[in-house]
Length: 543
Figure 1 (tube, rainbow, N blue to C red):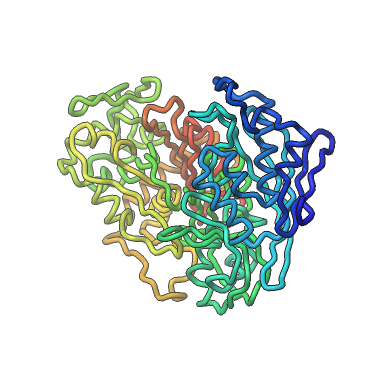
Figure 2 (cartoon, rainbow, N blue to C red; figure 1 turned 45 degrees about the horizontal axis):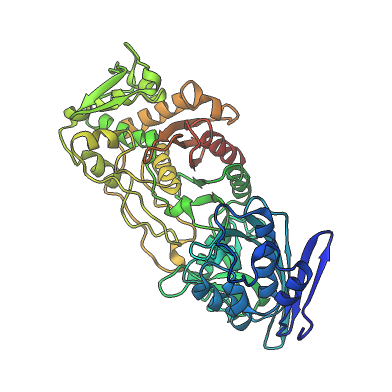
């Protein structure tokens, strides 16, 4: 063995330690285990294995791979994967580019073919050293051509923040650091608020120099050409940080983080209707793609806020007048049904809204008489598609023009309509305040960017009726159970959306309480009030 690489078995679990430019971890591991799982060299007469990998193969292959990686043998580790062409340079870069001078890798118990592990490394750059610890996981598969058990190579094996085309690097930061604070001056960190990690990275990339930050030294994810801003993983030297005030409210953010963490994939955004200030943004899983700001999913019946505004503006309905709500309705060959085929005979449009009657909206499409009317309402009144300048990248939502059966789906928030929680929260904020105020995370005078302006505001009578219908939804309609714990003036709208034939619909919910509006999405959560509703309620209570 060279340069002090060591392997030990403690309680049946191996630990690999490599220092300097250590080699030989793989060979010592094979010496201890005899190449468990058959991952070593095969004899020419050995038959090609087929079928699922065995537990022994999983343990042995994972052990060989991690030992070679920790032992400073990237080529050998790469040959134990199903994609050595990509794995080799990435593993070599762990030392050469990320400047890891020592590493200890400890696996956890396997779950099927997946093995979690912990990396404890030391990063050394220009005389500065700092410990670095993180967890990741690998999966063992059977090689298609050889039948050997191999690590299924993904960039995330090396580090969970890595994606295709990205690399780990250590060096001078591209921009100065920031100390982000909420609107009351309370410090915001990714450690305390994990969902803010990517948001803070984006804010730093854009505003680090503006607020006086000077670059330090760090380990970061380099996304490559055209990728997202670099994500900082470890800071060796902070340099100088500049203070950046955001619109986030620490209390609402903490509640949002906790609320979405209950689900595998969920997002929530909270906005102050009177200003457009974003008070919370959270995603599960945390630290990855910002679905809350950049997602694009059918929002289901939460879009009925926009559709109702259109029908009210055109005088086709009034909140206190009777509206048809049959069990189903056909439009251009497309049959739209209510949940479980319910109907409301002789009830008002407000009741249809609060009970989320699909057919009450579909019945009015012909009376609107303009295929572009819904798209115009979304853009001209609610600001959808106006290139919002929030301070970080975001997607504005989309309500394309549609005809025939596609138009029927659009009126109830499905078909070609796409939104994210930021968009839906803004729609609710507009309904609450009566006018669109572009959502934002940092003040516009920080970089003199132009906020989007809607062409017109809601007429007072329409805004009043929308609020009353949303209040009814929150107190006696489909949102009542979820909003029961929210005190004071409150309103809501539920939604569910079936996308690509999924078995369980996505759950959407939006609501307001006093001067706060929030919207949430839970993938596969079912009815709006079941999953997304409690998320919104928790954030509204905290805010």
